[in-house]
Image 1 (tube, rainbow, N blue to C red):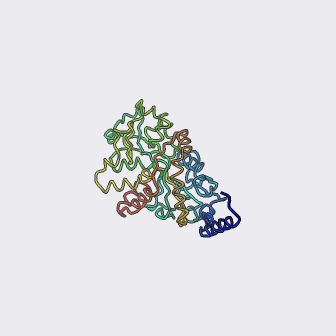
Image 2 (spheres, rainbow, N blue to C red; image 1 turned 45 degrees about the vertical axis):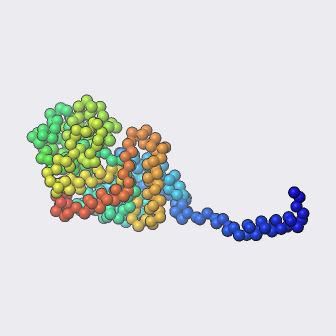
Image 3 (spheres, rainbow, N blue to C red; image 1 turned 30 degrees about the vertical axis):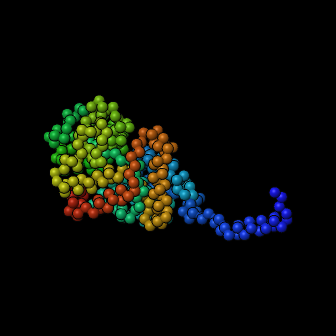
Length: 347
């Protein structure tokens, strides 16, 4: 059908009126979080030396985290060592920007350090916002096969010489915890730097035992465990269900009573937290939500998982909310039990 000019005018007028009644499509709202992070640098402060498990995991996360934060900022890991990580925690708490651009990778001993009042602690771990932990792995106490100590019962009657780093470090504290709670006769020799030097000392006969994480044994010396060159006497919680550890008791399950168990929980609190990452206090809520989501997305990222596997790092994620609960519980330990834990950690 051919329309005449009058009909065409009426048609166009009708269309124009119809379109006039449709609200205009609004422009996309700006994302204030993306706008803030775009072009910025996010620093991950690492409270330990280069080369260890904490350092490796922080740098691995840093490689992928930026692409999951709105605005895709540059993420730069940097080591800030001193006082077993206390220097880093103090800096993150009071000096670093509190705007969502400063994160920290925490050594596991820092929560217990605050709880028992270690000198130099100026931070409040309850005020950090905990993003999560990439992995958790139980501590184990392993004894070299020539020591003639194959069980906790043996370690209660025969002295064992254990290599450790410095007072306050978990390699120093865990054997002292076993002596206090389980009646073992472990003599701690400190001054070794890093687990590799401690395991080498054990292999050479300078020491007979060492505290090591299960992840570390599995990554570097699993053949020692399987060949019974190292006898694992006890593990901490979270107790591993790995077939290699299924018959190794946990120090918590061997505790004599509930008070002892709470002291143990405080001393090994970092073990339950794995290798935790936190953001400075007072980070604006919308940026905190974005960082929590970005951290979780990073641990699910197929490229990250592939890179972690290549580094022989297991991903057993702990969410930030769970870390926050652990921190609150440990710091609320009664004063008399904190005093008992202090004797193990600091005296």
